[in-house]
Length: 352
Image 1 (cartoon, rainbow, N blue to C red):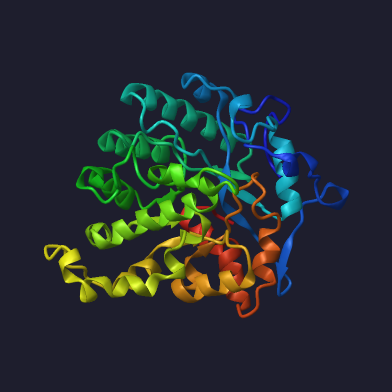
Image 2 (tube, rainbow, N blue to C red):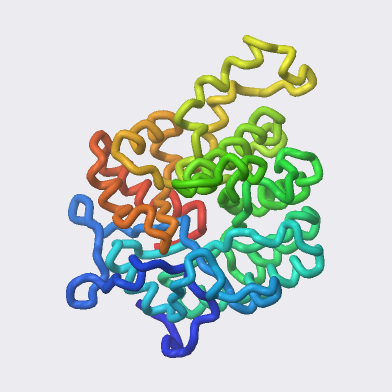
């Protein structure tokens, strides 16, 4: 591992929990390695969270107030957790909390976050890359921020929610951002923010705002991008969504039939170039589904070429993402190599 000045305080704080604090590096302090057919495989996690204290302060928040307040402020501790998981590289992202804020304040939050993320990646260049934060309430500004983050700061794309302050990403106002992402050829990572319209129904036991709300939010977002023709306007857009794409891949074939069954519910002015189920095979999805059966079904629906590791680290949804892929039957060695890191490396511009 190469890094510099590892003893200083990290510019980024990693969203923590009891699992992270209890983790130790692999036996002997060595990184757990994945080997297929005698060859070392680089593993890349596209779904890993952190926060920037300086940016939180701009929102009047502190690290201690976060939903998972047990924070790890030192890079090497996070790396030790990655070593135990067998994750070589994490693509860091920050969930957007600024979409409803004043545009200038949101822009400053994103500036601080992007600079601190770039600093973290420069400190540990072989362990971290990052997605930029963008001010999507102003899509033209967001496009400028994305270009600056990619070309000047070395970030690898952008992390966005599944909507912006109640506005759907399929709306034409967001076209400047999608156009810039397509032109740059970078990955856009979609992470849901629950489905706020259903908050009253999510109350009670089971953390339903997350358990149900998050995958539902992603499902709506992706469905709107498909049915409103956004993916036809930007056919080369690279999108990866968290949590296996929500519910969409699980029940996607139903999407091929509504405009036949009830054409009065479909816009005759939107002429899709493909069946809805064909669009889901052009997007990417993390492997944060919970059983081999779910992972196999996801691969059947979208193709193994579209899957990348996602852990939600350090929130302990999935403690062993590598074994999840390695132990799921039915995949070839080449498919496992691609899912573990090969595909993510291409999408994120990570070189051997």
